[in-house]
Length: 355
Image (cartoon, rainbow, N blue to C red):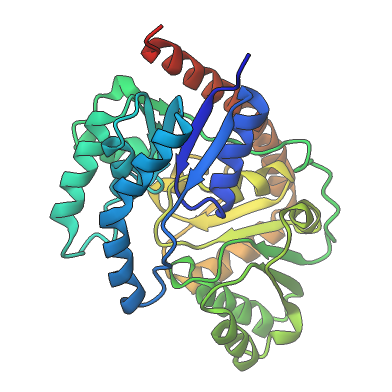
């Protein structure tokens, strides 16, 4: 029997996208074809070129559809690739909202246009992915037919991210696994550790990943006299991540906005205690001083206090990490969740099949 074909519209190099596509191959036996915009959006000149490319994109996509005859189209981001999926003419289509809302930045002059584009994508979609409950808030506000919405994270590989934690219990071994971009506020994290350093509290801080802020963050660590206690690993292979998480006892993430964070699930799976920003995307999973801690956005003094509290309350941390592991086993198991998603796709394809 011939494999069912899915056309994926989105940035295929992103870890999120790879997780999605690999899960569909593994648990749904799908063949995946990909298409994405080639122009990066790293400067104004390229952003203008990207708009032109976007306008011509539908012709390229329809050409691929004619040649490849996919059984289904899936797309990430309701305001870009999701809109292209809606225009593709293929049925069924599944689109995924990437953040708390895809209408971002919230003060953008193109917001009214984005709303129109998103509403069209929502109406045309046969299935809409909300990777977590926080994403449904903006969907309800946009009057989306919630019968089409599947609220389920893709999940993480619980075998790879095992719960054998071997961090040094005598000191704070903290880890940050978010990309080095301004919205993740690594500078706030560094400032909080400078306070710990002044108080004579021993720590090691591992910052994983790459991004536009790398050199300025290294400069800041030097300026704060903590560079010998901060380890910038740069980009690492995903296979090296579980071990680094297992060598850490505290996971920190300070973004100003959050959808559903696979990084948080990975930390919870590896018995790494989470301290994250007090925003809707994190409140879905973390209850303050129950199974982690919530810190006001951009408040480095509060983060320092919460780090000290977490380290001093060892018994609380040990109980919390056991709870968190059970939670991810129940709610964020990649094998279970991606099987549900793959089965749903097969069901949609069969329903829309002319035979």
